[in-house]
Length: 123
Image (cartoon, rainbow, N blue to C red; front, side, top):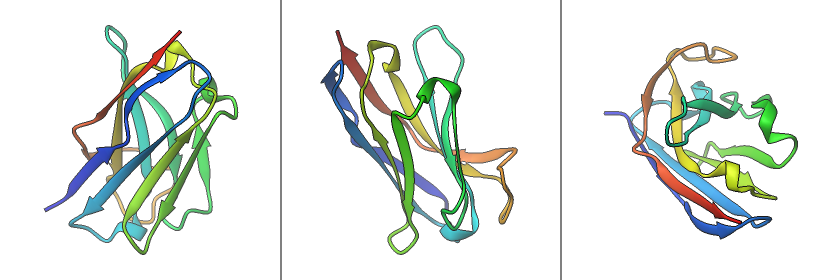
């Protein structure tokens, strides 16, 4: 059974940093691209960052502009999102997504995601 559990969200002031974590289980973790998506109230869900199965390739949403970094630990089945220089516009629920097919880059479709973790950035 696939499980994705996000953590690390919270309230932070503008300019601050947060590190989100996603604990994955129930599948061959290193075979799958993983992504972070976010959804703000009244807005569509958008891709924040994605990383290949072995961690050698990454892509980011245009709005990231060098502020965020995605990484993964294939020994402990974890994926991380380091967020720096946070802005009030980054306020959203952040979700961890699992690519649908193994060894596919970039992941075109996703089949599982977690319950999300709330990130709130105050001005």
